[in-house]
Length: 339
Image 1 (cartoon, rainbow, N blue to C red):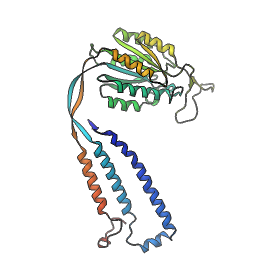
Image 2: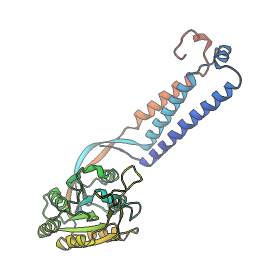
Image 3: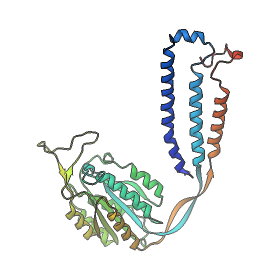
Image 4: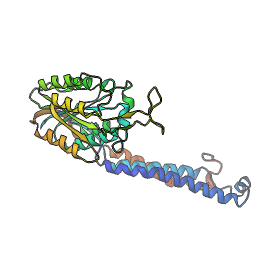
């Protein structure tokens, strides 16, 4: 497994586009100033020692070396030893609605983005628990098998979008059934399903699926996303809104009654998310009350440092950049590596 020991230093890569922009702006300014002195081709003949391509090569070598230095200080590592460790925790399967109605903006920034924020912060509150993710609309799909790798989980959360499920709808029942099949066989571990949805265009079978889960000892909690008043659904990459067959703008409303029924059947809790952390805190407290037992997890325990490769590359690039002169060398005037 590959990782960076100090990933915060990778934010320095955000400076790279700025360096490139400054470089091209400098070239533009220089070219503009030279054009004021006369014809470029005539001036080039008057300055035979000046190379057009050497400064460009030196810049790209230096920029690449800077990138290698950033990777070096970020501490690249490879996991070399996989061990089985025991931790006390519970298993949490998330079933997230990704239908188009989740793009509605009646909650900031929109229903789907708010859901992703809740998932990310909930993951931060977990300790030795396992978490998995199912996305659903008209169908349900496993996006992340149950795991204790929170870093990978948060990466999956950030990539969620409505295009993951082509069929529209709200198949909550299918999502709950799939979540039940996604838990580990350990019968002593407390398990819970957290459904995050607006309940719009519900397809049936959800209450029955939640009740079946409760009979097997798995609670079903529901986080309602949206407002009962509703809001229009923005079309992706457009300023327009979805319309029905009659040309009227579709207003999507949170179906709280359905969410409450599912939670009641699943012997869990229902909470509506708003622009505060109340829903997140309520669900986190529910998980804390669950019975944590010993669970086995596969983790990498030993990591080999791999910064040497990037450090040597940076060194070689810097040496090359230093050795290449901006002007042509008289001794090698007839060698045209850089025209």
